[in-house]
Length: 325
Image (cartoon, rainbow, N blue to C red):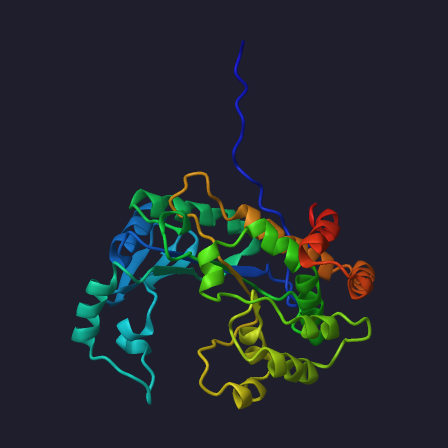
């Protein structure tokens, strides 16, 4: 009997809005944490796969420029090990000591790979990066007993206005019980207190049908309850982009980079698994965008949630049929 070849590739879904307000293709940045390979070894493996040229920023931070998918940085995930990133007023480490300590700490501190913004219709090419990581022995969540490695998406907001930001956050909190169940966060992330969901009181205020505030009021309400980066969907970079003075009045020293993107933090990067792709996680984010773009469905689901008396796990069952394409 002839064997049937099964395709193991997963299609990358496209969101309802492909372009931004200027008519350009939206972009998304990707961040992946891993261990098992140094920043230097990793960046040269990426160069071999994607082309480009390497710039050494310090012994533990490298940038690949003009690769097939744009610029990529790889570095040990600790500001203390990168003298150029150490701000004034805090603890500083001289370069030679930082370099030495970095070599010693590389067995404990993960590396972080960060892509420059990639056109949203080319996101599938990031899976080539994963192949390079596996080729040099990079390891992820499934290889660590006490640490879960993160995958983050930074999708550009399609329209830079309050209604779009509010709609996306409403959609996210309504789908988040399902998202968290699908992602199945590693227990170590829970133990480390990583990426807390939004407080229930804030969720109920946010999804109230009449809640469509101006951007200043939205920022004030958000910061009053969420003055932290520790959320599944971290809005601080976006809010800082909208109104830096307002955010810095509450968080003057927080490490935030202003950009017109959402920061979706996922707790599971299975880097060494040859079957792992970022597609399923991305496609779940697209479900958030689909709901955010359908105002009638968003309002109806909000009303249903406000009347719901069950637990989050059961609510995940309710929204699953809406979230899945």
